[in-house]
Amino acid sequence: MLSPKPWNTILILRLLLGAFACLCLGSLIVNGVHFPGTGTKALLFFSISAVAVLLLILTLFLLSRPWDTDDLIGKLLLMLVCLTTGLSFAVWAQQIAGKPAEGTSGEQMAVTEAAVLVFFTVFMRAQRITWAEAFGIANGRRRAILSGLAVACIFLPVAEGLQLLSAEVMTRFRVEPQEQQAVHALRVSVGWSNRLVLAVLALVLAPVVEEMFFRGMLYPLIKQAGFPRLAFWGVSFVFACVHFNVATFVPLLVLAVILTALYERTDNLLAPISAHALFNSLNFAMLYLLDRQMGR
Image (cartoon, rainbow, N blue to C red):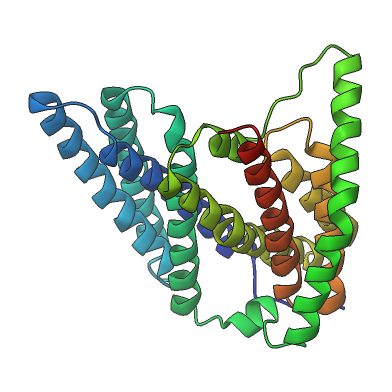
Protein backbone atom coordinates (compact mmCIF):
# COMPACT_ATOMS: atom_id res chain seq x y z
CA MET A 1 0.00 0.00 0.00
CA LEU A 2 1.38 3.36 -0.99
CA SER A 3 2.13 5.64 1.95
CA PRO A 4 1.22 9.39 1.93
CA LYS A 5 3.62 11.55 -0.12
CA PRO A 6 4.53 15.25 0.32
CA TRP A 7 3.40 16.40 -3.13
CA ASN A 8 0.79 19.09 -3.78
CA THR A 9 -0.48 20.87 -6.89
CA ILE A 10 1.77 23.93 -6.50
CA LEU A 11 4.92 21.83 -6.15
CA ILE A 12 4.04 19.75 -9.21
CA LEU A 13 3.32 22.86 -11.31
CA ARG A 14 6.68 24.32 -10.32
CA LEU A 15 8.39 21.07 -11.25
CA LEU A 16 6.59 21.04 -14.62
CA LEU A 17 7.73 24.58 -15.37
CA GLY A 18 11.25 23.62 -14.34
CA ALA A 19 11.22 20.57 -16.62
CA PHE A 20 10.06 22.78 -19.51
CA ALA A 21 12.88 25.24 -18.84
CA CYS A 22 15.34 22.30 -18.79
CA LEU A 23 14.00 21.18 -22.17
CA CYS A 24 14.83 24.58 -23.63
CA LEU A 25 18.26 24.56 -21.97
CA GLY A 26 19.07 21.15 -23.42
CA SER A 27 18.15 22.30 -26.91
CA LEU A 28 20.25 25.47 -26.58
CA ILE A 29 23.30 23.60 -25.30
CA VAL A 30 23.26 20.96 -28.05
CA ASN A 31 22.60 23.57 -30.74
CA GLY A 32 25.57 25.54 -29.42
CA VAL A 33 27.86 22.51 -29.58
CA HIS A 34 26.86 21.73 -33.17
CA PHE A 35 26.38 25.27 -34.46
CA PRO A 36 27.84 25.34 -38.00
CA GLY A 37 28.03 29.10 -38.56
CA THR A 38 31.00 31.46 -38.21
CA GLY A 39 31.65 35.18 -38.03
CA THR A 40 28.82 37.61 -37.28
CA LYS A 41 26.15 34.90 -37.38
CA ALA A 42 27.96 32.83 -34.76
CA LEU A 43 28.52 35.88 -32.55
CA LEU A 44 24.82 36.76 -32.72
CA PHE A 45 23.74 33.17 -32.02
CA PHE A 46 25.99 32.70 -29.01
CA SER A 47 25.14 36.12 -27.58
CA ILE A 48 21.41 35.45 -27.78
CA SER A 49 21.88 31.91 -26.46
CA ALA A 50 23.90 33.19 -23.49
CA VAL A 51 21.09 35.56 -22.51
CA ALA A 52 18.53 32.76 -22.87
CA VAL A 53 20.61 30.34 -20.78
CA LEU A 54 21.11 32.90 -17.99
CA LEU A 55 17.39 33.69 -17.87
CA LEU A 56 16.39 30.03 -17.86
CA ILE A 57 18.90 29.21 -15.11
CA LEU A 58 17.50 32.11 -13.08
CA THR A 59 14.02 30.66 -13.70
CA LEU A 60 15.15 27.29 -12.36
CA PHE A 61 16.70 28.93 -9.32
CA LEU A 62 13.49 30.84 -8.54
CA LEU A 63 11.39 27.72 -9.03
CA SER A 64 13.56 25.63 -6.73
CA ARG A 65 13.60 28.05 -3.78
CA PRO A 66 10.86 27.93 -1.10
CA TRP A 67 8.01 30.36 -1.77
CA ASP A 68 6.71 32.13 1.33
CA THR A 69 3.17 33.47 1.27
CA ASP A 70 4.46 36.99 1.98
CA ASP A 71 6.36 37.36 -1.29
CA LEU A 72 4.53 34.73 -3.35
CA ILE A 73 3.16 37.14 -5.98
CA GLY A 74 6.50 38.90 -6.40
CA LYS A 75 8.45 35.66 -6.92
CA LEU A 76 5.79 34.31 -9.26
CA LEU A 77 5.86 37.43 -11.44
CA LEU A 78 9.68 37.52 -11.53
CA MET A 79 9.81 33.83 -12.45
CA LEU A 80 7.27 34.30 -15.26
CA VAL A 81 9.17 37.29 -16.66
CA CYS A 82 12.44 35.32 -16.65
CA LEU A 83 10.79 32.26 -18.20
CA THR A 84 8.93 34.05 -20.99
CA THR A 85 11.89 36.30 -21.85
CA GLY A 86 14.26 33.33 -21.79
CA LEU A 87 11.95 31.35 -24.06
CA SER A 88 11.75 34.28 -26.48
CA PHE A 89 15.54 34.47 -26.73
CA ALA A 90 15.72 30.66 -27.05
CA VAL A 91 13.30 30.71 -29.99
CA TRP A 92 15.32 33.53 -31.58
CA ALA A 93 18.52 31.52 -31.21
CA GLN A 94 16.82 28.45 -32.69
CA GLN A 95 15.73 30.43 -35.73
CA ILE A 96 19.32 31.53 -36.30
CA ALA A 97 20.66 27.98 -35.85
CA GLY A 98 18.06 26.47 -38.18
CA LYS A 99 16.77 22.94 -38.08
CA PRO A 100 18.95 20.73 -35.81
CA ALA A 101 20.81 17.83 -37.35
CA GLU A 102 18.96 14.51 -37.22
CA GLY A 103 21.66 12.80 -35.19
CA THR A 104 21.49 15.34 -32.33
CA SER A 105 18.05 14.34 -30.98
CA GLY A 106 19.54 11.77 -28.63
CA GLU A 107 22.00 14.31 -27.25
CA GLN A 108 19.19 16.81 -26.67
CA MET A 109 17.14 14.24 -24.76
CA ALA A 110 20.13 13.21 -22.66
CA VAL A 111 21.14 16.77 -21.75
CA THR A 112 17.53 17.70 -21.00
CA GLU A 113 16.87 14.75 -18.72
CA ALA A 114 20.19 15.23 -16.93
CA ALA A 115 19.23 18.88 -16.31
CA VAL A 116 15.79 17.80 -15.09
CA LEU A 117 17.35 15.31 -12.66
CA VAL A 118 19.69 17.97 -11.26
CA PHE A 119 16.78 20.42 -10.95
CA PHE A 120 14.62 17.83 -9.15
CA THR A 121 17.44 17.11 -6.71
CA VAL A 122 18.05 20.80 -5.96
CA PHE A 123 14.31 21.41 -5.71
CA MET A 124 13.78 18.61 -3.17
CA ARG A 125 16.71 19.77 -1.08
CA ALA A 126 15.43 23.35 -1.04
CA GLN A 127 11.96 22.16 -0.03
CA ARG A 128 13.51 19.89 2.64
CA ILE A 129 11.92 16.80 1.13
CA THR A 130 13.95 13.62 1.59
CA TRP A 131 14.12 10.81 -0.95
CA ALA A 132 12.61 8.45 1.62
CA GLU A 133 9.63 10.76 2.18
CA ALA A 134 9.09 11.44 -1.50
CA PHE A 135 9.65 8.01 -3.01
CA GLY A 136 9.90 5.45 -0.19
CA ILE A 137 13.50 4.61 -1.12
CA ALA A 138 14.16 3.00 2.28
CA ASN A 139 11.17 0.61 2.14
CA GLY A 140 12.34 -2.95 1.46
CA ARG A 141 15.02 -1.82 -0.98
CA ARG A 142 16.34 -5.24 -1.99
CA ARG A 143 12.87 -6.70 -2.44
CA ALA A 144 11.77 -3.70 -4.50
CA ILE A 145 14.74 -3.93 -6.88
CA LEU A 146 14.39 -7.69 -7.36
CA SER A 147 10.66 -7.33 -7.97
CA GLY A 148 11.31 -4.71 -10.63
CA LEU A 149 13.92 -6.84 -12.40
CA ALA A 150 11.62 -9.87 -12.40
CA VAL A 151 8.70 -7.85 -13.79
CA ALA A 152 10.85 -6.49 -16.64
CA CYS A 153 12.01 -9.97 -17.68
CA ILE A 154 8.46 -11.30 -17.66
CA PHE A 155 6.95 -8.34 -19.49
CA LEU A 156 9.52 -8.05 -22.31
CA PRO A 157 8.08 -10.83 -24.54
CA VAL A 158 4.57 -9.58 -23.79
CA ALA A 159 5.57 -6.08 -24.94
CA GLU A 160 7.09 -7.46 -28.14
CA GLY A 161 3.89 -9.35 -28.89
CA LEU A 162 1.70 -6.31 -28.22
CA GLN A 163 3.85 -4.11 -30.44
CA LEU A 164 3.72 -6.62 -33.30
CA LEU A 165 -0.05 -6.86 -32.91
CA SER A 166 -0.38 -3.06 -32.91
CA ALA A 167 1.78 -2.81 -36.05
CA GLU A 168 -0.32 -5.47 -37.76
CA VAL A 169 -3.56 -3.63 -36.95
CA MET A 170 -2.10 -0.34 -38.19
CA THR A 171 -0.97 -1.99 -41.43
CA ARG A 172 -4.45 -3.39 -42.03
CA PHE A 173 -5.81 0.14 -41.74
CA ARG A 174 -3.07 1.36 -44.13
CA VAL A 175 -1.24 3.30 -41.44
CA GLU A 176 2.53 2.91 -41.54
CA PRO A 177 4.04 2.22 -38.09
CA GLN A 178 6.73 4.73 -37.11
CA GLU A 179 9.77 4.16 -34.92
CA GLN A 180 10.00 5.81 -31.51
CA GLN A 181 12.22 8.90 -31.45
CA ALA A 182 14.79 7.20 -29.20
CA VAL A 183 14.91 4.11 -31.44
CA HIS A 184 15.31 6.26 -34.54
CA ALA A 185 18.06 8.25 -32.83
CA LEU A 186 19.94 4.99 -32.16
CA ARG A 187 19.62 3.89 -35.76
CA VAL A 188 20.89 7.17 -37.26
CA SER A 189 23.66 7.70 -34.71
CA VAL A 190 27.21 7.04 -35.79
CA GLY A 191 30.21 6.44 -33.58
CA TRP A 192 30.57 5.08 -30.07
CA SER A 193 30.22 8.47 -28.40
CA ASN A 194 26.69 9.01 -29.73
CA ARG A 195 25.61 5.51 -28.85
CA LEU A 196 27.11 5.87 -25.38
CA VAL A 197 25.01 9.01 -24.85
CA LEU A 198 21.89 7.12 -25.95
CA ALA A 199 22.76 4.21 -23.68
CA VAL A 200 23.05 6.52 -20.65
CA LEU A 201 19.74 8.10 -21.64
CA ALA A 202 17.87 4.81 -22.05
CA LEU A 203 19.43 2.90 -19.16
CA VAL A 204 19.76 5.60 -16.50
CA LEU A 205 18.29 9.03 -17.16
CA ALA A 206 14.93 8.15 -18.76
CA PRO A 207 13.93 5.47 -16.21
CA VAL A 208 14.83 7.66 -13.23
CA VAL A 209 13.31 10.94 -14.48
CA GLU A 210 10.16 9.40 -15.95
CA GLU A 211 9.46 7.25 -12.90
CA MET A 212 10.07 10.16 -10.53
CA PHE A 213 7.58 12.29 -12.40
CA PHE A 214 4.82 9.86 -13.42
CA ARG A 215 4.81 7.23 -10.66
CA GLY A 216 6.63 9.16 -7.95
CA MET A 217 4.83 12.51 -8.16
CA LEU A 218 1.75 12.62 -10.40
CA TYR A 219 0.27 9.30 -9.31
CA PRO A 220 0.29 9.94 -5.52
CA LEU A 221 -0.80 13.57 -6.02
CA ILE A 222 -3.97 12.60 -7.89
CA LYS A 223 -4.63 9.59 -5.67
CA GLN A 224 -4.31 11.63 -2.46
CA ALA A 225 -6.68 14.21 -3.95
CA GLY A 226 -9.38 11.53 -3.81
CA PHE A 227 -9.23 10.10 -7.35
CA PRO A 228 -7.43 6.73 -7.11
CA ARG A 229 -8.84 5.30 -10.38
CA LEU A 230 -8.05 8.45 -12.32
CA ALA A 231 -4.55 8.39 -10.86
CA PHE A 232 -3.99 4.75 -11.80
CA TRP A 233 -5.37 4.82 -15.33
CA GLY A 234 -4.98 8.50 -16.19
CA VAL A 235 -1.29 8.74 -15.36
CA SER A 236 -0.63 5.47 -17.22
CA PHE A 237 -2.48 6.82 -20.26
CA VAL A 238 -0.50 10.08 -20.22
CA PHE A 239 2.77 8.12 -19.88
CA ALA A 240 1.95 6.16 -23.04
CA CYS A 241 0.84 9.30 -24.90
CA VAL A 242 3.96 11.38 -24.22
CA HIS A 243 6.11 8.91 -26.15
CA PHE A 244 4.25 10.08 -29.30
CA ASN A 245 4.18 6.73 -31.06
CA VAL A 246 1.02 4.89 -32.08
CA ALA A 247 2.68 1.51 -32.60
CA THR A 248 4.07 1.41 -29.05
CA PHE A 249 1.05 3.01 -27.33
CA VAL A 250 -0.58 -0.26 -26.18
CA PRO A 251 2.60 -1.94 -24.84
CA LEU A 252 3.63 1.30 -23.09
CA LEU A 253 0.15 1.65 -21.57
CA VAL A 254 0.31 -1.90 -20.22
CA LEU A 255 3.86 -1.28 -18.98
CA ALA A 256 2.73 1.91 -17.21
CA VAL A 257 -0.14 0.05 -15.50
CA ILE A 258 2.26 -2.65 -14.31
CA LEU A 259 4.81 -0.11 -13.06
CA THR A 260 2.12 1.77 -11.16
CA ALA A 261 0.85 -1.42 -9.56
CA LEU A 262 4.44 -2.32 -8.67
CA TYR A 263 4.97 1.03 -6.96
CA GLU A 264 1.66 0.71 -5.15
CA ARG A 265 2.57 -2.77 -3.88
CA THR A 266 6.18 -2.08 -2.83
CA ASP A 267 5.85 1.60 -1.77
CA ASN A 268 9.38 2.05 -3.15
CA LEU A 269 10.08 3.87 -6.42
CA LEU A 270 13.18 1.74 -6.90
CA ALA A 271 10.86 -1.08 -8.01
CA PRO A 272 9.43 0.66 -11.12
CA ILE A 273 12.80 2.35 -11.79
CA SER A 274 14.54 -1.05 -11.83
CA ALA A 275 11.84 -2.55 -14.07
CA HIS A 276 11.92 0.43 -16.43
CA ALA A 277 15.73 0.45 -16.61
CA LEU A 278 16.03 -3.28 -17.32
CA PHE A 279 13.20 -3.15 -19.87
CA ASN A 280 14.99 -0.32 -21.70
CA SER A 281 18.32 -2.12 -21.41
CA LEU A 282 16.99 -5.31 -22.97
CA ASN A 283 15.37 -3.37 -25.81
CA PHE A 284 18.56 -1.35 -26.32
CA ALA A 285 20.63 -4.54 -26.48
CA MET A 286 18.26 -6.12 -29.00
CA LEU A 287 18.33 -3.03 -31.22
CA TYR A 288 22.12 -2.87 -31.05
CA LEU A 289 22.47 -6.54 -31.96
CA LEU A 290 20.00 -6.11 -34.81
CA ASP A 291 22.00 -3.19 -36.17
CA ARG A 292 25.19 -5.24 -35.91
CA GLN A 293 23.59 -8.06 -37.91
CA MET A 294 22.52 -5.55 -40.57
CA GLY A 295 26.09 -4.24 -40.76
CA ARG A 296 25.40 -0.74 -39.39
